[in-house]
Amino acid sequence: MTEAEQTSSNPILVSLVVSIAAFMEVLDTTIANVALSSIAGSLGASSEESTWVLTSYLVSNGIVLPLSGWLSGLMGRKAFFIACIIGFTFTSFMCGIANSLPMLIVFRLLQGLAGGGLQPAQQAIIKDSFPPAKLGMAFAITGITTLLAPILGPSLGGYITDNFSWRWIFFMNVPIGLLAVFLVKLLVEDPPSAQKRDVGSVDYIGLGLIALGLGALQIVLDKGQQEDWFDSSFILIFAAIAAAGLILSILWLRQQKEPIVKLSLFAKPSFSMPCIMIFFVGFALYSSATLLPMLVQSNYGYNATLAGLVLSPAGAVTLLMMPVVGKLVTRVKAKYLISFGMLISAVGMWATGMVTPQTDYATFVLVRMLQTIGLPFLFVPASTLAFSEVSAEDSSNASAIVSLMRNLGGSIGISLVTNQLIHSQQVEQSALVQHLTSADPGYASALAAYVQTYVQSGMPAAQASNAALGHIYQELMHQASILAYRDAYHFVAWILLALAVIALFMPGNVLHKKNASVAAH
Image (cartoon, rainbow, N blue to C red):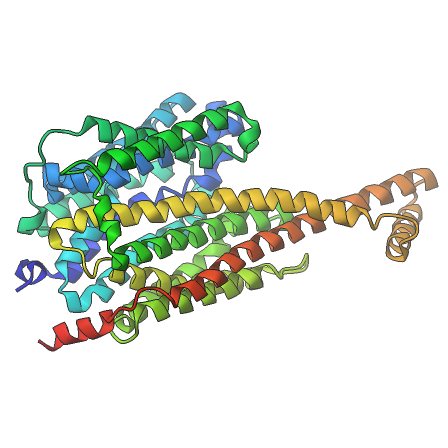
C-alpha cells in the first residue's frame, strides 16, 4: 500500500485545497505587470524605479524555491506550507497599505520569500496524495495552477487596476489566504516521509551561496535589457557574482552528505531530461505572455484590460486540455506527448508572427489559444516522468528543483525574447528606411498621395510636404515594430521546433505501461 493510499482525505479535495494557495502565489508573478504605471504614479516614483516591484519579488522567490525541500524537512511539509501561506497573506496586506515605493519593494521582497515554497510544497503534496497509476491526473491538477495563473494574471491585474485600485491586487490575497490556511489545517495530512525530521546543522555556506548566485542571476535577467546588458558595469558585477555563487554552490553541495538542494537527482535521466523540458515550458509560457500584451498595447491601442482579455480565453482552453492530457499520459509515451506539445506551441508562435496592422481582436485571441493549447502536452507528461522514479522522501526536493527550472526558464525566456525584440526593431527599421528614396515608386506614390490629402484639407504646400513625411515615418515605425514582434515570435518558434525533435530522443520510458500495470493491480 502506497502513502497516497494511506491518507484519509480525498486526493482530489486535497489537491484543490493546496492549489488555492499556490494559484494565488503564481498569479502574483504576473498580476502586477500591467499595474506598474499606476503604482509609480500613486507613490510618486518613476516607471524605471517601479520595475523593482517585480524584480524584488522574482529575486526572493527564486532564492527560496530550491531551498523549499530542505525547509519542508526542517519544519514538516504541512507546517511549512501553512507558514508560507500565513507569511504570503500578511505580506500581501502590507504591500496593499504601502505608502511609499521603498516600503512596497521591501514587502514584495518578503512576499516572494514567503510564497516561494508554495509551488513546490503543493506539487509534492499532490504527488504523494495519488497512487502511481494516477500521477498524470495529479500533475494535470498542478498544471492548472502552473499554466493558468500566469495567463490570467495580466487580465485580472488590468481589470482591477482600471476599475478599482492597484492596492486590491494585493488585498484580494488576504481572504483567499485565510481560507486556504483553514482548509489546509483541516484536510491535509503529512505522510511519514514528509514529517519533521532531523536535518542536521544548518548549512549556512550552501544557503548563502545559493541565495547569492540565484539572487544575482535574477537581477541580471530582469534588469539586463534596461541597463544595456554587458555595457553596464552594474550588470557585469552582478553577472560575475551570479556565476561565482552558482559554480561555488554546485561544488559545495556535491560534497555534502545532506545537501540543502539534492543535485544527485539530476543523475537520473528520467528526472534531468524532463526538467530541461519544463525549463522550456516556462520559457514559452512567460515569454509569449509578455510579448502579446506589449504588441497589442504599443501597436493596436489596446488598454490594460483589453490586452489582458486577449490572453484570458486561452486559459479556458488550457483548463479543458489538462484532464485530457492527464488521461493520455497512461496511454502514450511521455516523450511523444512532449514532442507534440512543442510542435503545436511552435505553430502557435509562428502564426502569431504573421499578424498585420489590420489584425483584429478575435484573431489575437485565436493565435493565443494556439500558442497555449500545446502547453499541457508539455507540462503534464514532463512532470509525471520527472517524478516517476523519485522516492517519497525526495518528493519535496524534486518539486523544488522542478519549480526552479520552470521559473528560471520564464526569466531567461523573457530576457532573451525582449532582447531579440529590441534588436529586431532596429534591424527592421533600418531595412525599411532604405526604401524611403525618390527612386522607390511605392514611396514616391505614397508621399504624393499624402501631400495631396493635406493640401486638399487647406494646409499650405510646404507644411503639407512635412506633414506627409511625418506621417510616412510614423507608419514606418509602426510597421518596423510589428515586424520585430514577428521576428521575436519566430525566434521562439524555432527553439520550440528544435525541442520537438530533441524530445523524440529522450530516454526510452515505459511510464504509460508501468502506470497501467499498477492500475490493474
